[in-house]
Image 1 (cartoon, rainbow over the protein chains, first blue to last red):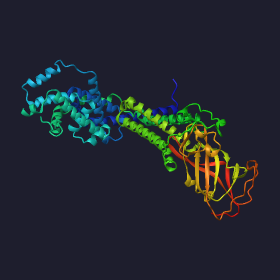
Image 2: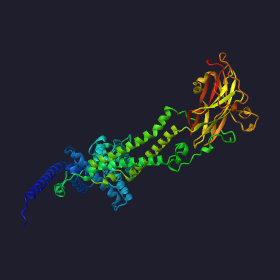
Image 3: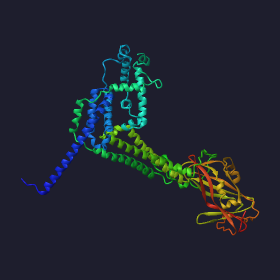
Image 4: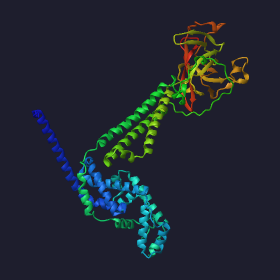
Length: 201
Length: 384
């Protein structure tokens, strides 16, 4: 077996040092990411649950967002903006999931007429009736509209803040909000919800 | 739940309440454990695509610029030597017709009237320069807009995502198609701008020949380096008639709209001329006894067809200047005198200012006479 020469030993030493530096950098990044992700995981999960309306799916969405965020963690130049950056990834994951839902709708066993009749004849309170109507109307919104409504009325972000987070013009946010609210009303009325009925209740 | 009375939409408070009801609360421990394992999956890396994306944006912009340049070169190389007036805007990308010099000069006069439409926009001079600059500025703004959007997309892609495919997801294919259309529109604007430059530089209205001059007043002619000169005797209060020929060397019909008397008045010879009268040939009297019979129609805007020409009679009404002595008396056969040299004072008329319209655009030109006209006086020093 040939003994290693001095040059070879030096090269090996440099390679090991480089590996250590890379590994150290990776460990530092991992710990930094874990710290930040853990800090904002609640926020991300709750936002996902509001957008998706399903805790189980929200859990998967938050996990997927964390995976994506970790893969792209190197592109985040300012850790102070992690919350906004992570929120944007969560929103994008939720949007993909909502679009997937639209392409692969789940067929409910009860028909729309049955639901309407159920709403009108059930003995549930008017508040619950209206919430059901809002729930169904929200599902029928475009994914982008659902996201804007959630950010505006759940996270209480201003139009400008939403625009910055989604990287879209403020005018687009306003437009989406306007159309979303109109669509909500239309859908709720289409489902038989009436202001008088709920007021009486 | 109430409805907003003013807008008819669900009130914000109800929406907030309903959305908070969907809030699933803090993240479950199960999720925290899953996320804790995320960092073991793959090390973070700076996306190569993220670094290359600005380069790709530059490449898109450069490709657009190259496309515009190629289109300009195609348009330039296929353009006729006389510009769009020799080829037309539509023919800029096709073979250029060969202009025939045989058709210049005197031509048989076609049937009258040949009055073209007088839709003349007075946009010569600075307004015309602005009109020429407009397509270039518009093209430049479009390219800047394209570059700006490309960089915005690159930035958006870097900030938001890590996949190359996301660039296509951020902007749907329709947007990319519209960008191609923007490049084509910019190229078309540049081509139109080049055509307008050529249009501004081309002067299709030219002077043909001095067809004839008043035999009673003509003294003779002389050939010079820059062209010939015909001399006519000045008679105070009299008039001189010359028949001249205007040609259209372009491929578009032009309409001669007016004789620019104001510009003509700036010439030294105008001191001795009280008015200029233009007459056009009248078809009904063709073959009449003399010029006055033939050119009996008063001047009005008239059209000269492409590569065509038209003659007219110009009558100069001379001022009655008491201090100016009448010019010499013509000889018996003045048209055979080709080396006439005035021995007394004289002034020459070298240019005739006309206004004409092409494609509704009114232009002004000073026609340089091949055979300038000399008014010969009876003395050396003349003032009127």
